[in-house]
Picture (cartoon, helix red, strand yellow):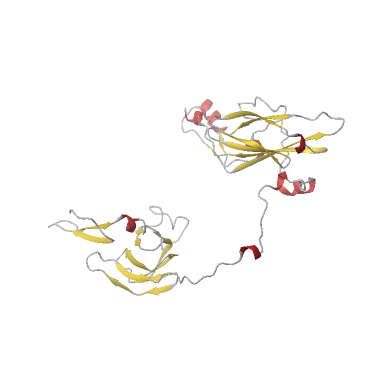
Length: 301
């Protein structure tokens, strides 16, 4: 074959004594509108939506801007998704599929004799909307970091789920270098997802491997100190944070942003200067928001 494809072209390759092969050829624009949704297994179960575990049937859908789901109900393929314009729909799937619905509406289709695909047209959205006056809209928002606000007091702290980091002992064979006598490993306080386990029959290595925890999401640390006329004002804070290679964190003094650290090493030691105007009379807080997607490559040695 030596040609430049336009749109979608189906070619059936046949030879005596062999199983025919259907080749689907499309240009770049067509290829970006190809979808391969999983057909859920009819028997259901926890793996019904996972191919090679529960689901066994394939379907290819070409045309829509987005295909969100595909469900086979008897001989009807129910598709859901989004359109950005009137679209030519092409469905390649089991021959038992006789009809197609799109977002609950039956789509008139015909079967292509070469490819066996079902083809039809989907009407695009009606572009008759009006843009609202956003200056008159009622806006709502949620504070994503209330812990740095002046109104975040003891009552809010008790409701927030913050846990006092007051452990002084640990089973971790790698004691922290700083922060004593308190143990400031997130895993000590239940903030972890899973533990990597060694498959090797080496009890010493296995013990070490069990202590490497892969944390997920963010950790928030909140330290407290007092400042007043009879207490010298601190000028800076030194933060030693461990999060694996390529982790990061941000720091605040009360509601004043101190800075961030993004590193390729597993532990960072950073100093942040305190602006005088950010200090409060009485109780002050240093807040550290740590993302925990760093890796610990030494655990795989």
